[in-house]
Amino acid sequence: MAKKQEAAPAKNTPSHGVFLVEGEGDRAFWTKIGCAWQHGDGEGFNVALSALPISGRLVIRSKKEER
Image (cartoon, rainbow, N blue to C red; front, side, top):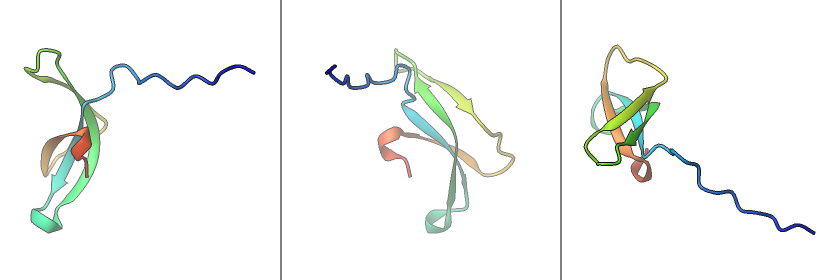
């Protein structure tokens, strides 16, 4: 019987999530609209959005802190 291999971590996995946040405080509504990849030198990000917001604000959070 062949050994089952564990899946290797995906390359180029996004390091951050991009969210549209509307409202303030406990009443804020968060919608995930994309992902971000930190540059190797730590000086910036590549961002891919699946929607373009016309209101609210964009928040970029590290994956471990996603809501």
